[in-house]
Length: 238
Image (cartoon, rainbow, N blue to C red; front, side, top):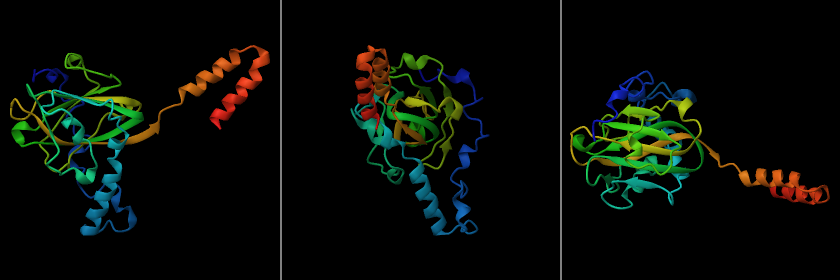
């Protein structure tokens, strides 16, 4: 199954117009504090801190509903979503089980605008070489993953989390559920290993639909009950 998805080409997957292969440079707005002319330890530390704050969407994952398909050890898929500072922890990783594919179903606790991803894989032969992103398709299985993705991206061997992959923001600006399918690896190995997945973006709390529904029902009530019902709604909102 490692060959499906190749027909999507490199048009939006491995184009380098986003510069995603060079985001480990000292740019990215970190030089705006007047210390951008030197690249000493303080600059590197500042860049690390900023990146750590950016790649924090792991805190917004609903882990109770999270699933990873074809993981060798149950529950190991969750461990690769952690803080940027802990990205090099080699004790936490997921390995594929019966073949090279992995599929992550990632529900968020609100709505996310996805802006960047980091992927740290295993050694070259087990490092994923492609990821396929699906938006708002909960509970996907591998049969579902045969559909065309919202975006396909070529993944390079990266042991440090240097390379930032840029999703097409217009497609991923209202994500409540993200599925990431890794269909293959660099070595045609039966095993794919992933040590860290970093997610960067903006987060908004889930909307309170129940307030809207209650207000609508209140307006539909007979006139003699309307005032009291609306007062209750106002108390809920305030």
